[in-house]
Length: 370
Image (cartoon, rainbow, N blue to C red; front, side, top):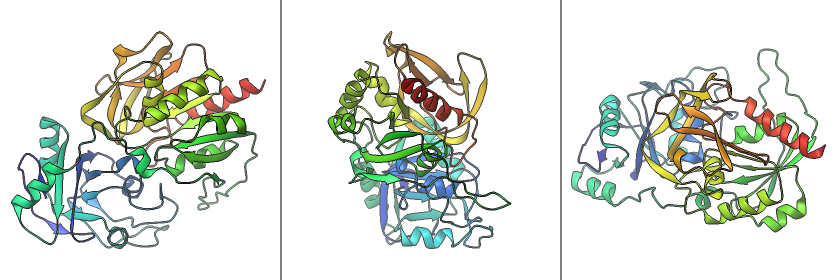
């Protein structure tokens, strides 16, 4: 494994064969590697997991966040193919091989994390069939940077579809319920996590998922109760089609909720600026402060771009900030039912402290109906 600064590491292959390249990011979550690997927001990125022991809970069908692995590669310290979990249906190794994800273990993940902390995001290459350092270094340095890269069109759905599944956990006496569908919403898919869709169903929404560049004329024809803009990978600024769509739908006074990339797109639509972070936020233990109450919530985070608070127009107010670095985490329109959050209130993995933001979206739709 070689970083673009020339740092190199040798380990053992624990996934697919060949080579892969991408921006190397570290995630500090202790659990939830399956959700991380299948999160479309990690497209074109090699994920390093700082928790040392990976693979022990195997893979199961209910924790998938998309149709398959979305990361470019995986770096871990201690990998095990022996799993033990009441929901597991297979091993992580088989999952990586089946999805052709190049992965490397027995790596000094602490050292790589320190390098990224000191130098910022770096591109890297993992190679299994060739020990040619110069080739790996060239591949790392030739890899695409995320700046200016629209990856939403790479991971979005190609067709409109309805999502009807809520959370299906049935263990320990819990029963899956069939919630009433009180609201119809459109979800713009920039790389949407399935747990977002599950939660929307659970709170009573009939969910229709559309491609990231779906025409607003068709949305207006469908006359939904609300519009949701999802998480996703890459730089938000090149998504000019989405920024234009938000402006049009905002003028029609649709309730709008955006998470992660969706949050950034809302900010851009109202004149704010975004910028690449030196080191992004990737983990499930990030404290976020709510401005109105002073309360602190622990959140799941996964982003490499941020909205510049100083660029906010008078039409937007800040609602949440990161306690780690003071970066902007939430915005709300002063007069329209529009708001967004940078982190992931749907968790998967992570805490559910901010799950109530979905309730806020629900209330905005109720108010519109009244």
